[in-house]
Amino acid sequence: MTRVPIDRSTTLDDVRAAVRDWVDAHVPDPWRAAAAQGGRAAIRAVRPRADYEAWYPTFADSGLAVPTWPVEYSGLDLAIEQARAADDVLAPYNLGRLNPLGINSVAPPLFNHGTEEQRLRFLPPLVRNEEKWCQLLSEPGAGSDLASLATRAVRDGEEWVISGQKVWTTWAHFSDFAICLTRTDPDVPKRKGLTYFVVDLHAPGVDVRPLRHIGGEIDFNEVYLDEVRVPDFYRIGDAGDGWRVANATLTGERRMVSGGGQGGFDRIGGSGMDAIIRRAAELGRTTDPHLRQRIAALYSEEQIRRWTNQRVADSGGKAGPAVASIGKIHNGAMNQRIQLLATDLLGANATAWEGAPTAGPEAWADAMPYEVKGMLRSRANTIEGGTTEVNRNILGETVLGLPREPDPFREAAWKDVPRS
Ligand SMILES: Cc1cc2nc3c(=O)[nH]c(=O)nc-3n(C[C@H](O)[C@H](O)[C@H](O)COP(=O)(O)OP(=O)(O)OC[C@H]3O[C@@H](n4cnc5c(N)ncnc54)[C@H](O)[C@@H]3O)c2cc1C
Image (tube, rainbow, N blue to C red; front, side):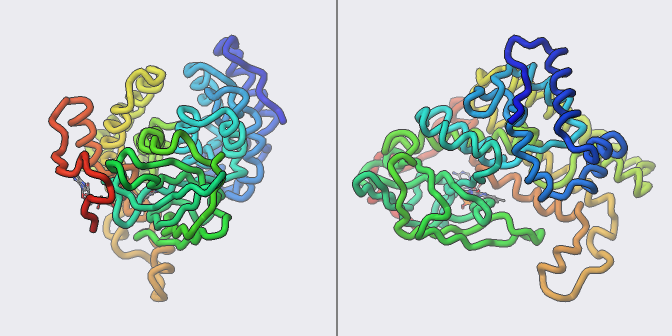
């Protein structure tokens, strides 16, 4: 295990030098050569995903995957500007963080509401990608109105027994653990009777059934929980306090979708403007004045989003959770416009492409140009992590001080509220 020998007292120049030394010693030669010669595309060509996953614990052990986290949870306890200096050195090597839902959605509730024992148990293997994570929040009858969810958890001695159905669970089909929001008290108003757990997805009673996106990939799943037993140690926060704990997850996820989360995750679906500009040149489309204007406008907007995310990160949390909703609304809509531009560059080839097979929708989707896949995937950006409408409601109520949405059942016990 080779942790980079830097800490909060290290100067920015020394941070850069130490990270360069680490790269020279630990990033495999062919990957470094590819980075020097051809950037990300060249790296992808010599670095299959399986090789990256096998090497990844070396990166995690350096502390550079989560540089601002405390050392005991696999970080380096660096200040934001030190972490940025380290990331600048790493950027050409495209060392994307694995387990992004773990880092962005699971770690915040553990930091804010978990016990020290829980943090030590779950965070180091999460950072090493040895235990992969997903989130069991949405249900067929509870999406935007998440607090109305029906999955039940009942205490049985030192264990809890969980039964219910979750849906749209991204990456459940290869995850080891999930965070799970459950109802433990139906006799109180909906937000008060919730409790937040960790669920071992390999436990008896868990049934994961994959669903396929319009772009062909399997990303999300239905998850059935049939009397799944979890130890009380897996409860994060107090029984009945799950809504507060879940908000740490929701804010972390919104930050991730806004491009301002941990680990350089800047969009879900498609490519960034740098790659799209290169592609436009390859396709000979940079002389079209209309396209040039769209490219320039979206390039500028993407830069502004990046700088805004940097300002939020620099505020060290002082900007408050509402900025996650602002970023999420903006980045989701902007990425849709960016991916539509990438698709438009293809002209007629975006609607009919060579080699489209006749056998079945999956094979058809496999042959789809990656720009079209990116564009289709980006349609979900204004839904996942809370829809744009719901995030606007949050901003209206928490930032603008507008009246709350009317809810005749606000004080009613959950069990007395009509449900579809
Ligand atoms: C790609 C993708 C990945 C996802 N991954 C996960 C995951 O890993 N884990 C998980 O738990 N969930 C996940 N989700 C689910 C996601 O959180 C929900 O889809 C989302 O919260 C919306 O809920 P819903 O689909 O039930 O829509 P609904 O809540 O039924 O909303 C339908 C429409 O009504 C609007 N609406 C609803 N309530 C209001 C209101 N009060 N005011 C104004 N408009 C309103 C919505 O904006 C939307 O347009 C994922 C979704 C997608 C698309």
